[in-house]
Length: 299
Image (cartoon, rainbow, N blue to C red; front, side, top):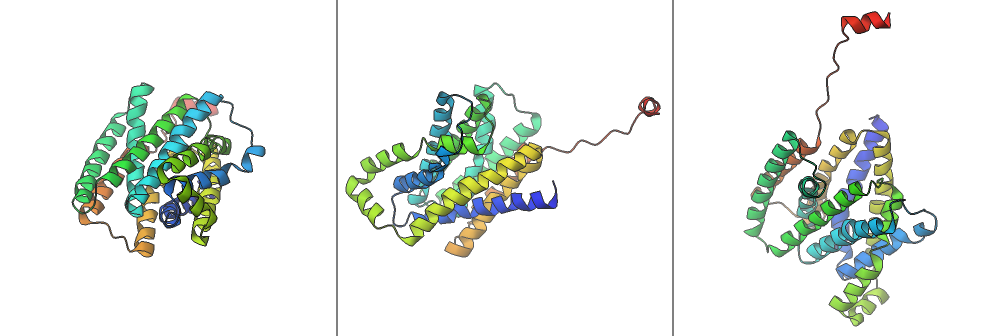
C-alpha cells in the first residue's frame, strides 16, 4: 500500500476507535435504541434515493441488515447503556474475528487453516483472561451483551460472504435501512412513548453531534474509504489495520473518560489481539528465484 492509502486506513481506524466514546456520550440524554434509530435514519436518508441496492436479493439484504446492522449495533448500544466501558467494548467487539471463523466453519463448511486455528485458541485464551478480570470489578451482563454484539457481527459477515455481496457503500446503506423502524418500535416498547417523545423534543447538541458523527463519519465516510481500499489492495494488506481500532478506542476512553483497564484486562487484551493477528495476518510469500529453464525462455 502507498503512504497515502496507509494514512487513509489509519484515518478510518481513528474514526472507528473514537466512535465508542462518542456513542457513549450521545446516549446520556437519548435511550440507546432510539439513538440507534436516529443514527441509521441519517445513514439511509437521503442516500437511499441516490444509491442503487446491491444485486443480492431482498431476502439477503434484510438478513444482513438484521444481523450486521440491527443486531450488532442494538446490542452494542445496550451494552454501553448498561455500563460497558467504551474502551473495553472496542476491544471485545474484535472477537467478531474469532466468531466469524467459527460460524463460517459451521455454516459454510470453511475449514480454518492451522494458523487460524492457533490464532483462535490464543484469542480465546486472552478473552477468558479479560472476562475473569472484568467480572471481578464490574457486572458481567454488559460484557455478555457486548460479546453477543460481536457474534451478530460475525453472523452478518458470514451471510454477506454467502450471498457474494460486495462490501460496497450500497450494502451499508440498504442493509442499514432495516434498522430505523424496528429500533424505534423496540424503543417505544422498552422506554415508553412518553420517554421517546421527550428525548426527541429535547435533543442536546451532544446527542445531535454524536448522531452526525456515527452516521456520517463512522458509517458513510469510514466504510466508503475502507471499501475503496479493499477494492484496490489485497484483504491481507487492509484488514490488519482493524487491530488498531481497540488501541485507539482504549486511548480515547482513557483521555476523555479516564477509563483505565485493569491489569487482567490489559494482559488478556494483548494476548487476544496477538491471537487475532495470527488469525488474519497472512505471511508474505517469498518470491522464488527464477530457474535456469525460465531464464532461457525469457531469452
